[in-house]
Length: 584
Ligand code: OXD
Ligand code: MN
Image 1 (tube, rainbow, N blue to C red):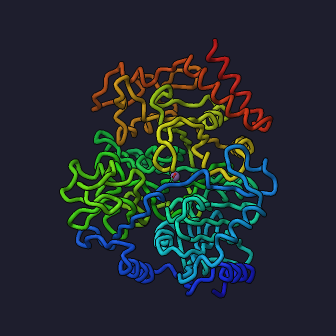
Image 2 (image 1 turned 60 degrees about the vertical axis):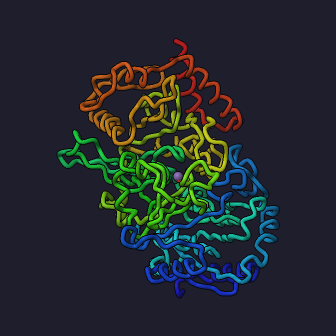
Image 3 (image 1 turned 90 degrees about the vertical axis):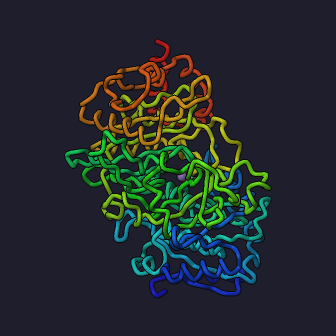
């Protein structure tokens, strides 16, 4: 407590006066504390302790059925000037938001405990790390934040005079969906979230702080806060390359970050630095440096199994908090994809016996595991290196049943930024919205960029311009379907073949074909040994459909038009070059 600045203490006092909790607890982030909070929750039947023989120190939490995903229409950014948030964000005036929230928070913690969670985003002692402090009445948030960040005493000890804290206030309230809000005040480093207990809305350190607020800070200070994994790829000679990839929510970003190469590449190693968020800096020498601000994984459980992500399965056998998965008679968690058959007598994610259930699935499609990065076997030793890792490749990608090739490479960095800015993808269960419709999701950041995305594109251009060594930019789509609706590419570990192609491109080891949209692999430059796939299928996966792309450009034009004349000229230049190549 000694290290907490007086203005922060004053804010906590103010917040207590409004919310009126019965008890205040400063969390120290220790294992004992987490165990005690979990035990209290178990006693109140808010949490289920899983079978400790097979899932040691693991728990299951069930969110209320209408509170299992991010709620984008209620995610607000409040600034003095509406134009600063742009057309992809919901704006509310600061005064209106504060008076609405003050009313909602009035006495909201009555009879409850207020937990105070100081945390660090980023490795200890890193000049790239930032501090935050969340005040919450949710013991679930305490447990989640304890896993996903460096939370508690460490944060207070490491904090130095003058270091800023992002402040966050959260309450479960009464989970009233009509009054559910996730609100950001980037001009005062303040977050407020109410009537929700879903991780993506309630654990403020993650999306609200590390992406929405951090993106604004990053622009101010010349770096980037991105919705990206970071992986380390080590070749058979021990040479390491770091890749950062922005894939839209629910497009297998975690699985890609943890990919296990197919058997024929057994001398290659993929290790994870982070699976969801990357903070990217321009190092003094002009290299792009990345850190993972998080300390754990909040991965989608549904469909995670031996095929999609064999590496995570061991990690989630201990110290893991599951949300909205099914429960077997043996008190183990279950979700579709974990095993091939549904266990008899499994209880679904809502707590009902499978046979009586009206749910289509046992686990919710956005069911999650929160698990510590430190216990993940295939982590990179660099994951907590305060100096970060040097990034050589940037990947963009999302889920598209048609048009977008399996992989293509930018002609240059400006073109690569346009590729990211043009990204349109199918929506998935991570958002409380209709699944499967195609929407613009530039750089996988549409839900996470805390300011006007036109200014964000300009910031990308300026940032890249300033780099002496510019990472090459690629685009991937693992999700192409044929006429019968079947996936054309096997995906999962086989995606490593595409990663390897990218790495070979860095050293010009492999050839590519210049197409209007960028370079695609020459068939023989892809290492497809041991894979049963027809050449014809690969050719289709890499085919560039010019008329389809001209339609795509129209959609981009409509999207860019929403920003008036704010889209940077560099992107328009690339847009027109692309249009010309497609028309030629
Ligand atoms: C996530 C998301 O939870 O992107 O990572 O929604
Ligand atoms: Mn994400």
